[in-house]
Length: 477
Ligand SMILES: *[C@@H]1O[C@H](CO)[C@@H](O)[C@H](O)[C@H]1NC(C)=O
Ligand SMILES: *[C@@H]1O[C@H](CO)[C@@H](O)[C@H](O)[C@H]1NC(C)=O
Ligand SMILES: *[C@@H]1O[C@H](CO)[C@@H](O)[C@H](O)[C@H]1NC(C)=O
Ligand SMILES: *[C@@H]1O[C@H](CO)[C@@H](O)[C@H](O)[C@H]1NC(C)=O
Ligand SMILES: *[C@@H]1O[C@H](CO)[C@@H](O)[C@H](O)[C@H]1NC(C)=O
Figure 1: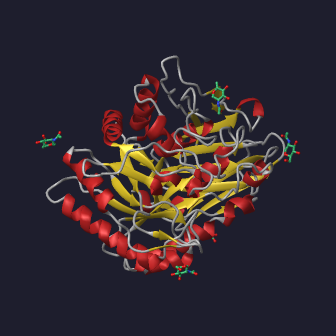
Figure 2: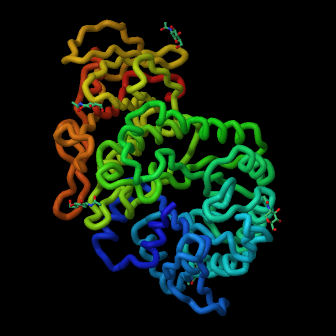
Figure 3: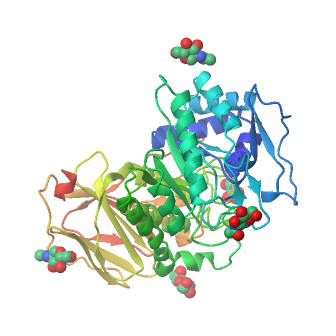
């Protein structure tokens, strides 16, 4: 929602070595890192391509204008600088195009008329001519459904997406790699998304939607919401509805969460940059993956209170480490997981990433109870658990049912907040604080080894990733 990335584009000093190193480190860590350049102001940007005759003025704050800013301009020397910066860093860029050019904004809040793609077309041409690799071109930001600021109808968007596909095909003739076409980059609306995906079967590669299911960042009850399983669960209807639409449609487009920051208007200081936010974030990664979401773009890498990196020091916030562990341990194949136990324990299981077996993610929202979890597996998956309020004794209550054993140990990564304070900005991994060293190097993330006969103990207010090599369901072979 807030266009933090655009702020970076327009104002951030790219000669900042710490910024380059931070982005480089992240590209290496996430191999590759996808960065989306876009947001609220993207639909007000003019690209100062050589053929563009308008003057190139920076964004100015203006309360009378939509989104609170005047029209702005991206000078081509800035784009040159950005492209070489991201290329050096190794990031994959998703570029959000201005989808409002040429339209009339009506007093009833709709935007009507065809998209005038002249300026976008010449911008894409300029990029290709200069060999800038753009991973994907995204059309518009939050203009679908009820829209933010203004709305464009699904039928109009269909013809504009077709137009974008045509110009991209033309410009990329003989050029590799081909970029993805993404859209609409807005909030899910059943009818709009259905109408849209049904008619863009040959032009669209990725359906993007945005999620801010925690409400506004100013909400003083944000933490209570995050700790409430019913709040976390309520967004699952969005994922399942979109999943259903794509399954029933002839489209081969994949679903991405194109932007998600939890609480809108920049999140909340000491909530979205602290340990507690990882409950929401990892739960989202788990839930979205279980509905076949292929990519989840976190708002933001840097910027606002929900940045993965601290805005001034570029040091990682807790969610950064959560994302990194997720990325390293959870493979592409998602396993249907059922968990019997209290709702305050959340469970997800995937095939392990690039290693044998499975990885289970367990989130304990409860602040005084330790959960003792056993993994069982038959044709379907079941996670069983016993829970207790005191130090658990380790009796072997449930016989483990498991696949072929390759080892008798599993690897566990226990994430807890410093001093047991869920609003801490420091996250502990297996009891040790995660901190970058003086040259900004990310610490290695080492597991503890636990014997297969022991249950997984998920302490109060903690998160556990367990890589279990001795459980190998058919889907992971
Ligand atoms: C909004 O106004 C435009 C232009 O007058 C009109 O074409 C359109 O049908 C209106 N839409 C709604 C939903 O009222
Ligand atoms: C782009 O790449 C082509 C082929 O490698 C090369 O001939 C051309 O000079 C490059 N253009 C620019 C502007 O770097
Ligand atoms: C960024 O890090 C500094 C130093 O650790 C800290 O004082 C500050 O609160 C952090 N900023 C935010 C927005 O979290
Ligand atoms: C646990 O959470 C409850 C309800 O939010 C709170 O009143 C209590 O102080 C917390 N206890 C601990 C040990 O953090
Ligand atoms: C296998 O899974 C099903 C579905 O969760 C469950 O009802 C059944 O009891 C399980 N079988 C065994 C032997 O655990």
